[in-house]
Image 1 (cartoon, one colour):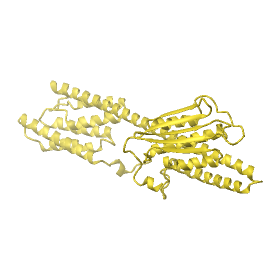
Image 2 (cartoon, one colour):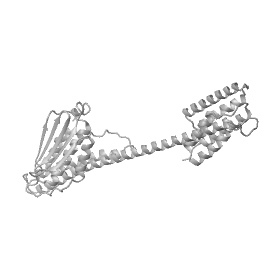
Image 3 (tube, one colour):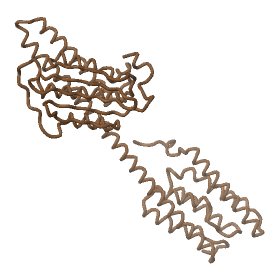
Image 4 (tube, one colour):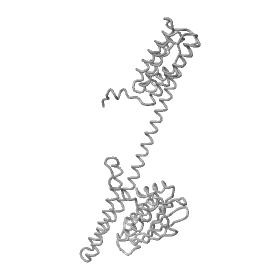
Length: 394
């Protein structure tokens, strides 16, 4: 993208403050040197000192050109004034800007030219030998080393910022993947079972088939709504939001998920123990997803088993437990798939990650008497809860 003349000449307030400050410091130092050596204050030399300082307004966009202007004006001051040459603040700031903004080769050339040019003497002599030359060389080296260290620090900070941004993006992708897995696995399983029930009852019990189709329609509508809410996160910034997104489910929505499990053909009991109180949104969402995933797995792997959901409120934590009695324990007679051994698939992995993010623990293992049990413990600080009005809205 091309830049205009106005863009190339743009400078900030900080650039102006640096330029004015450098000009004031160098002019003050020049006046003190003149008084110290008993010479008259030369107006032309003083104007050149001020001009060198004010040229620093362009140091960010044109550091090399700014250094060249400062050095030319400095040489003019050293060759015309009656005071000894010295390394002022203006050449130090200009050289520092080159060291920070340009590559090493350019900085080396700038340093090799800055040291001798700032030491040009008066009265037509090329150099004025003595301590002044050594001090200017030392000052040049100090400015260059400082610029290199600052540039290295800036690069490290930028790399760290990019790394943190990449980690945040990866974490958000994992969260969205877990949400999509929970939504798709639960609702699709429910829709599959309800569709099968509707097909089986279509001939001899049309009313049961109609209820199954109504439940299937509602589950599909809810799945689309939740998936749309998650996909809106990926489209954030593309278009303005006109309607606020629906709130994420929580512990208060467990009745709904249990009712869906019953409609899907699994006998499901729901028990709440302890004093019910509002939970932080992230804790409530985690409890909801754990129950949702556990019931989905029970319907897939335990078939006609009976399930038990227990939600327990304690002073400093909340626990959710979902257990089933295993295939063949319910009223149905159909065989169910055998639960795969091992640590589990993505569902259990997602549940463990969710619970771990809240600082809790998750237990998932088969029962000795048959069946499977999933239990999550989620710490909740006393007094922590959902925002005011959320429970009333539910």
